Amino acid sequence: MMINIAKPQMGKEEKEAVLEVLDSGIIAQGPRVKAFEEVFAEMCGTKFAIATSSGTTALHTALLAHGIGEGDEVITSPFTFIASANSILYTGARPVFVDIDPVTFNIAPEMIEAAITDKTKAIMPVHLFGLMCDMDAIVAIAEKHELIILEDAAQSHAATYKGRAAGSLGTGAFSLYPTKNMTSAEGGMITTNDEDYDGECRIIRQHGMRRRYYHDDLGFNFRMTDIHAAIGLEQLKKLPAFNETRQRNAQFMSEHLQGVVAPTEPEGYGHVYHQFTVRVPDGKRDALIEHLQAKKVGVGVYYPVPIHQQSYYVNELGYNVRLPEAERAAAEVLSLPVHPALSMADLETIVSTVNEFFE
Ligand SMILES: *Cc1c(COP(=O)(O)O)cnc(C)c1O
Image (cartoon, rainbow, N blue to C red; front, side):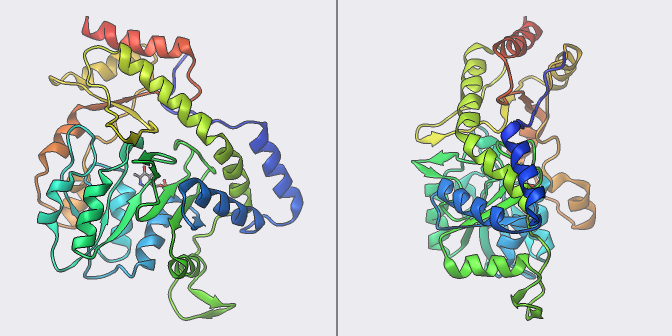
């Protein structure tokens, strides 16, 4: 039987919660969304959380609520899911890509300052694969240059940096897509400590409406439904156990894998292993993928093309930069299953299948 790369964990709690909403008569955004926002903010250690229809709309709303738009630049990582950068494009602003650290795969803070111009409004660190960015360095740069920090925390629910949760060191944006560490089927969350900013996000989410059917600004329908929130509420209760299992699975694989470079968990960081991403040296990555697929071990490549080399960015937007570490990572990385549904036998199969390739 195939060992899948991801497997959403839906129990009877989620099923019952959905049925309760269907019977309640309030199925669009209502009391469950409000309750979900409250517990999500608590999990992040922030005062407020705003639920949205997806991680992408959370990022888009978060940027708009900071007043980012045409003529602005936002610094981010080229080695991430396309939504990080596309959300910047939606506002009319331009993503400026800074190369990554080869060990953590996250944006290299020492290279950020050289990319700052008088158009730069924000830095969007992406906490990739469940490991947070070097936030002390990023916060120091942002303070010095008076820049906004928008954390793309789509892959890092409850990840920590020096005891602080993802989404609490700047404005946070999360995805609740089924493959993420927790899900609401589709959904997103914005986190903040600023009451005015919280209000601004809510207005953008609801067609720019401050007073019922009076529209002073252009907004969107980016609302979450109570059906999605009901799933999210149950998933949030299970998140600590999900993350602990991911960490245990990662530890087992790191201890036993040969021939590949396992992920690192630097001192002071709480890695939540959204992905267990290894580096395969010597051009053997694609051959290892074939070997794993033949043995029915699920495998993913996140991401095969860095954003500055995606054809839309090159051909339509004219990007023409070289970011050697992001490009090398795209050619060398491979992610192995690490999700909470893996059995001990699955983990042993994953490890032995990789190791036999190198023997
Ligand atoms: C999943 C993801 C998003 C987008 O979230 P959706 O819920 O799929 O819209 C944004 N950024 C990163 C890094 C992601 O992994």
